Amino acid sequence: MDPNALDDVNRVPHGGTDDPRVIDFSANTNPERPPGVAPVYDAALSVSRRYPADDYGEFRSAAAAYVGCEPKEVIPSAGAMDGMRLLFSVSIGEGDAVLVPEPSFGEYEREIRLQGATPVGIAHDEVVEVDDPSEYDMVVVCNPNNPTGETAETCDLLALAERCRVAGTTLFVDEAFLDFTPRASLAGEPGVVVARSLTKMFGLPGLRAGFLAATGRLRDRLDAARVSWGLSTPATAVGTHCLEQEAFVERTRERVAEERDRMATRLSARWDVYPSDAPYLLFDVGADDPDDVLDAAREAGVVLRDARTFNRLDNHLRTAVRRPAENDRLLDALAV
Image (cartoon, rainbow, N blue to C red; front, side, top):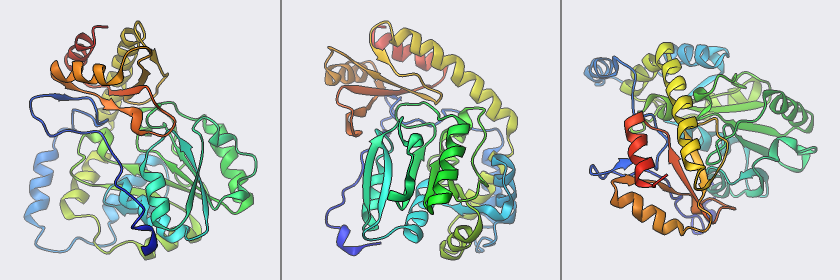
């Protein structure tokens, strides 16, 4: 990390509220969690007087099976954010340039600046089309993109990965929401580093569990640089359990897809809604004042995400896709 960058880098605004009186549509986490989590957590807590095994063998195996790579290619992390900082710390530094999609997850720019490197913005739907990645030390792709929700075609990502390999440029793919889709991960692809989060699909943002997947020399550097015992015993046990819940993942995908389509149809009767493959919808409120829409929703007991904090968005809001009855309450509150 570049100490000189600390004076100029601010915290990034995110969704999420701890107000128990409202339904939170501002954070894109699953409102449900897999069965059996509580007893797994309790059992792990009972043995937490000892340090966790630093090789994380069971967790690596479960994660590798989940994304389709080799267990040794998995780098455990306390959430995808922790993994992203680890990657940036060993891959970029002062004077480097990193291509980032816009609008997209605001932490990319912040973490890049913390390393003394420079983020270079590009339209989110153009990043996979970059012909010459040699101009950059790293290219970042968010797939599905947050907050817009669309996924890149796998063939386009593989073509970009090949161009990055030829150029000697690291390709970083944030797949935090990819498990809400049936698309294959890029985990295990040479020259590509994938970040995965257990926060979103499994509805456990406070657990802080995730991982990177990388190959070759970069994988070795990441494994050497990661913090010892960085993933707690409860997070390891619950994470391993969740990654094995195939039926839960499939049920969640089906519910989200059905509800997302229903919500998009209702919202589009009043506003412009972006096509999405993710558990959220971005919409432009047009002639309406975004603050008025946010206030009306809040008065009705629901909280939306103000998407104007994302680069290139100035009239947009984002809503998560929750359970049917909760989604009905949101749609009624918005009078759509």
